[in-house]
Amino acid sequence: MTAPAFPLPQSSGHDGSVEHGARRRRTLPRAALLLSMLFLSLVLQGLPPRRAEAQSPERLVVLEMFGRSDCVICSEHAAPALDALAAEYASAGRPVAIFEHDTDNSSNLGMAERRRRWFRLLGVTRAPLPLLLLNGGLETAFGEEEGGAYEANYRAMIERALAEPPSAQVSALWAPTGATTLDVRMELRNTGAAIDPAAGAGVWIYVLEDKRVVHLSRYARGVGRLPLARSIAPNESVTVAGEVRVDAGTDLGAVRVLTVVERVREDGRWDVAQGAYAELDRDAPTPRPTATAEPTSEPTPASTSEPANAVTIHLPWTGR
Image 1 (spheres, rainbow, N blue to C red):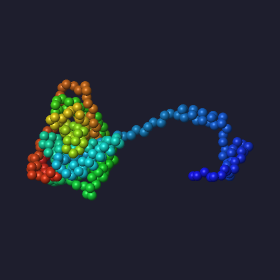
Image 2: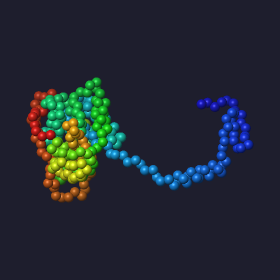
Image 3: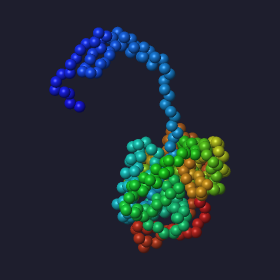
Image 4: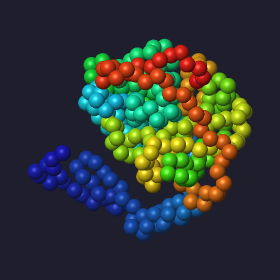
């Protein structure tokens, strides 16, 4: 607001107030003002500190992409969108893990099992790449996104999963035991319904490297499932340990080990109960664990004449 070009009449009241035009403002004497400020300061110092409200940790969201080196949709659309989302959530400190599997890597048996699950969920044997698996099967996607809305659609999937609370508490340690093997030990507390391996629940380990091997900037060098000997009851705490194999030539000094607990919901869909990145155990014991990641069988490889933007899997198969 622009000040007027002429001065307003002023007059001094007998009580120390100053009049500006028709308005009158009262002022405290300087000594009284200082005493009031001192009193307020003493009162505030006597108040107990305000406690920050404890925030429950968000549930981890895992988004796996199955791609192929010559998949055009992967390289030009899906991967840029997913890399942008990964950077966005990492910058915001949100627990979202986005990484890629090479669907042609027949030596990665854990990847093959994850891929078979995707096909079983949709009840098909052929689908266009990329294949996306969110939280083990809570949601899936594949091929082109309508209207080219890759980033928007993928973000919507992630946000829906983030909105749900965790149902477990997880911490883990890992240590290399050889050129292509590492041990993982997870401390798991179940804070939800029973985690039943007979229904398909399990502990999954992903050995990830921040390197563009195919399309995404993060790649799964190894995938393993640690065995659960029995159902884990609500409020029960257990230790799960085992060994995971990685691709030959993996630099174990450059990987991050993601540990994930999956359960099956009442509606029959897989979902993540909770997960965490394992810390490197610098005091790992020498003995090797008795449990190992469960071996899986690789499905019959797809025909070499198969189009680059599609993948075929041969069913039926057993197990979850």
